[in-house]
Length: 149
Image (tube, rainbow, N blue to C red; front, side):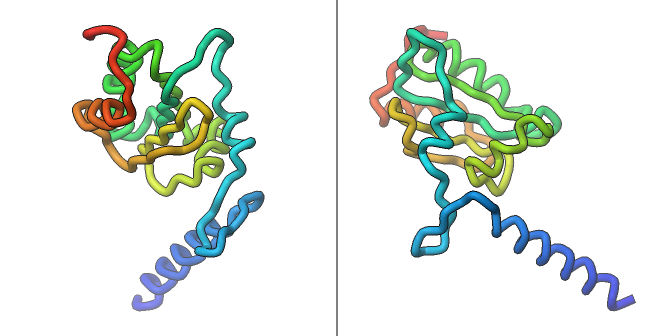
């Protein structure tokens, strides 16, 4: 019976090691994964005539409780900052959008990634991000609401 927990532990370690060796990622001197800004830029393609100050990328799933709690926050931010913040949601548990989990090198969901207008990452948050805290972050970035919603 003692071997069963050891087998589970070994399987978990192997899964973590295989996730850490993601193909197509460059490793910096600290061993952290870096993705090319060109590949991240390709994931964030705004419509023409849009020039948001911030891209708010939510990486989560519709089947995850904290991710579902982020849905009203995203809708509110989208309504309140519509001209200044572009909100993008990727359901990383779907086959079509799972590539974004690897692209943004996320470890837990939900994860919020914030890019500036030139699509460079400026901040990330893991877990539920309360609207009040999110709005404080946006204010520190100089982003003001476009409506009072």
